[in-house]
Length: 238
Length: 290
Image (cartoon, rainbow over all chains, first blue to last red; front, side, top):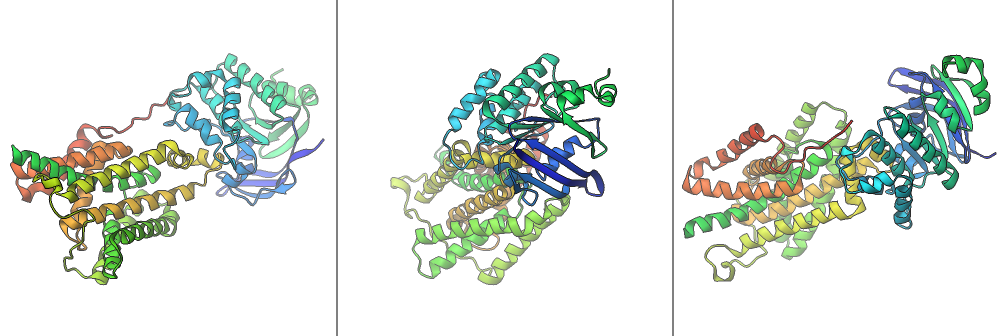
């Protein structure tokens, strides 16, 4: 299988605080890869490091064989990495539709923007209902949908999702995860998912990595990970 | 009665100038949440550049266009060279830099062009407007210029992808970067636009108050009052506020407090608005659910 994202010996720090200590990670083309781990393991930092957002990094990051670790955040976005950040990153004072239009900002031409907007509205009909509403007034679940929709508008090859289940009702989470799976299958978008809820993540992912204090301690196909005793005890609560 | 009408209309004309400068202040405030205290002096300097080009024999509109473009470039360069390196500095340091810029442009204008008062031409006919005794052609022209600028900016921000990106960058820099917007470039663009707007305002006010390095000092205060009254984060509000201040200044100055206290009116307005309605008449309260 082709590797879309290849991360080797990635170190990341906030100022003097080292968070990642030599991380190795692969995301295969067309697959869903999950990053598991407890609070503070470095999951969010990994996603930020991939986009050169707020952290200083060393190590190699390649997207489809091309080094992206020397580029800045906006260039990485234009290279095809769609980042759905923790906290959802909503443009509160803009409308839902303006939020989505911004997602398409980096595209070289306006062609297909209207079609993609239609696609996002089909995945998330709630966003269509709220299209003219100030985005700050959307519920948490709707804002999560908006964040995913905004990233999709950039036609990413790789979608980074940071805790999409955070703070949402279980039914809403179920909905969003089902749609993420559809997006992965129908659009062929590869996904790197950070999730504290290991059960949820392993259900949707093909491959998973387990992080502890900034290092990968275990990795493999989701089915293997699910049956691993250590994972079951520490992260699945069995 | 005629006097009242006359003072109101003439207030609208100066209000148009305040509205333009207020608009420039709002441009930068929206992008960085800083008030550029040097905006007035930059506008004054731009007007001197136009004056110099006119002395060299340029036609009015050629000098006008060149000044607007040059002001855009210089203001954008100031953002890049002076303001950007300060983006992590405490608020007070930024304010000090703005005041420094104010003093630099003021002294530079005095040194290059002198402190003697100069006449500056108006592009509009000198005689009364269609024989009316109420308004001069220049006053009518200044109002129109202000309204045209507002309409252009409004369309730019509401209807173009670049305008939307600028609004986004001002609101949420991190999310903007994640969708591929270069926030630094947007700030430069915002400063450039503010510089260009200020230049137009300077060239519109100079025929009325005459050109000298102190030309914009009072104007900036009135514009500041206008921006605060209308809402410092709202371009339409700032323009409305500018017109309100212009009319109030004239009416109160003529009928109530006298010309000596006119400037105090602006300051009283600033304080009053900040006490009663801190976000201004049209200032937006962003609604957020968590």
